[in-house]
Image (cartoon, rainbow over all chains, first blue to last red; front, side, top):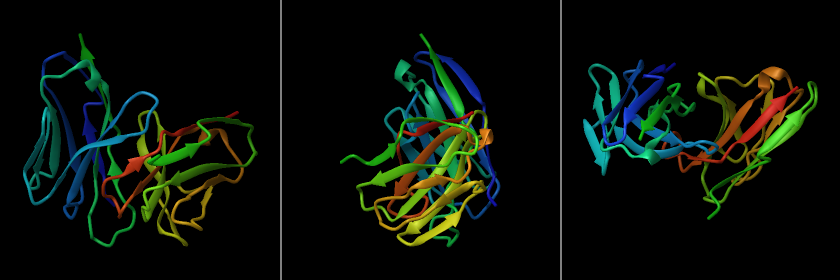
Length: 115
Length: 112
């Protein structure tokens, strides 16, 4: 099955700086890569996703890049703000592939924004 | 819309007790799933359902049971609680497999 590795487990950045979280996946058939943000005491929330037919996707201060050859994808947050402090999860799956076991998640990155 | 509603939010059980974690969604999603979240382990899939009457096992199904009699509800049953089942449990739903999950706010379960 799919295996998703996520690094780093903890990331501390100064407010206003950029943050980058990286994930690698093992199954070359995976074609959908979402990112979830989990604030303290809440469930994960989808913030951005990318399909394998594009290399980059942006939404305001967040962006995701995908390198299919190397089987890794990254989340980039620019101009970080205190409300960006949270745990971020990457995930991978095969959309329309017939497999029924859904998303495989990374173990999460605790992002800390220092004032 | 309420989205995905989980009850209870907190629960303490004694070893050997049974209980049901409730999950309901009002978005007419076909796909529903249960995850457990443990420190340093991320989110691990327990059971999932691709529609009413259809369920299957995920990565860590032992000790848990599910059923899906309606599109809206997907309860998770702990048959005989063990301390290893102390965790935070999340229910999720989506229109179809893997895509655009909506998570509930979670149930924090402690087994003593």
